[in-house]
Length: 394
Ligand SMILES: Cc1ncc(COP(=O)(O)O)c(C=O)c1O
Image 1 (tube, rainbow, N blue to C red):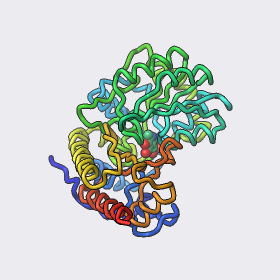
Image 2 (spheres, rainbow, N blue to C red; image 1 turned 180 degrees about the vertical axis):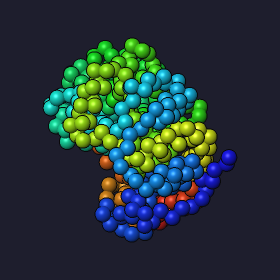
Image 3 (cartoon, helix red, strand yellow; image 1 turned 30 degrees about the horizontal axis):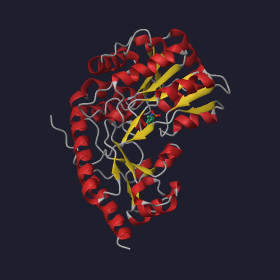
Image 4 (cartoon, rainbow, N blue to C red; image 1 turned 90 degrees about the vertical axis):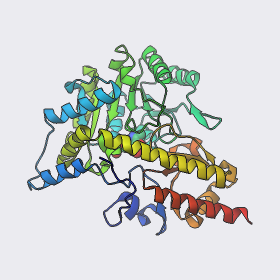
């Protein structure tokens, strides 16, 4: 079956965070929303069918996943990533952010050091700081339009700060890197050497642009597996973030028990009844939908690359290897923070994520979500070009 990702869906008045809350976020009305990581596409039809079937029962009490749910999760990761998961390793959880917060509390004590690699998904830093742990940064290195890990700095920071937990973003949001097997292996080796637990947030693992390949950290070697917590979720992949369901894979029984205890301490043990049926349908029937979606996103990225290089050479296109997020280097516009926002919001009429929210290293960058119909991408880029032309003419 061929899915229609060109279909434009009006998401207004659906309580959509992306579309319906401009005023709450201090944005003016009428901006084209290209921010936050959810997609403007209709979901896989079997997901809607499963939800409708469940809804028609009309009793929505406390609900738990059964074997068929776990089998669907296990098959997905086994078939697509060669990750051989045992049912008892899977800890269902409402979401990945809450799992990160639980992991921080479960595996570290107040003041212990937790390491992240900015510019990175901003709840990482927030979950460390709000839980009163010491935030240690191993900034990514930005060179020739691509991001790299500074492994020497990574190991030094781990040793100097006695880092207990590393929150790994793989693939990386916002910079779009799909870490190579060698890079993931090096991360594992260093963490193993220093007994640093890895919380590997792999929520974007299904968005990979060939020839890149995603390596689940936990598959590198059985030696490293007991050290790794793998966070997965159908929410990004299948656009069901509002259904509140994720699966955290923890092979190490001791760590799993600590995590589950903390999850109870936080009252996070339940998932959503509709999330369960949606996730099962997604992982059972969603393979070709995800493959077609990736091709569609790739063509959006290709269009953006051509358009930006031709019409907005002041902006540096950073070639994404995965995710559906475009990370643009706007330093060439030579605008301060305030003027850049003025350009994006008041002139281009776009609502994007400002780079600085991902850490100071993101200053001068913007993040655009291209998981939307091609027509929306074209409109957004045209608006940006017109805005840039208007300031260049002065
Ligand atoms: C890297 C990363 N982790 C986690 C999340 C959110 O996870 P959840 O909605 O399950 O809390 C996102 C959403 O954008 C993300 O990009």
